[in-house]
Length: 191
Length: 109
Image (tube, rainbow over all chains, first blue to last red; front, side):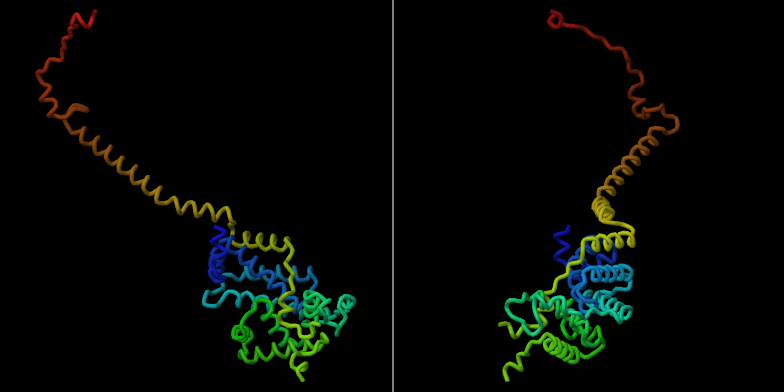
């Protein structure tokens, strides 16, 4: 039974889970919990305990709101809208406590010295901390892009902006992160 | 030197799998909210698969019952001795119920 479940699409799983199929819900959790955690890190930093609490909060809301899910909307879009609202609430409730302090990682990978000696996952962790310091509109695009790897059209649908704007915001976010990380952009290297 | 890291890819590489306690809490909340768990769902599937068998068994019981009742009614027609039809009565009338037996010597020795 579990083997069959793993072959179903997200939306098919969501419909089964909405009707009380516990296996389908578990598969949804296994598929999406890591992505939701990664996306939420762009709002809340990389503290594992904080992320665990937020992920739990997101899935609790999904359970409570299953009745309002309609299959016309792809399930990941619905899930990440719930996650996005959870991230926004977290930022509002802890507006002055956003962890923007990558210094504890500096001894391992000093800023501006991104080399082959610095593991990619460490750079990624620092980047996520820097994402938390971006403006809200840039951060939300990053959230949806890195969490669910959604196409820009769907990111635009969720945020209520044209897909070109979503793409442009992601470009600006990446440029800002590149600058803060102390890494030259590919364009500037060509000059 | 890695001077051109793909920022988006680096961000996607961050992994923070939620702790097992989160999964337990979420699944527990799901079971509580929907009022049934995996066992109940399995029992429901078994019940659904067994329905044709139950229907067939019920039909056999009903058909047997009707046949038995019909036979009883037929045998209880007014004026008929219990358990014997009138035609059988006519055939038996005047028939001696005595039977005679004999043994051949070869059967005895």
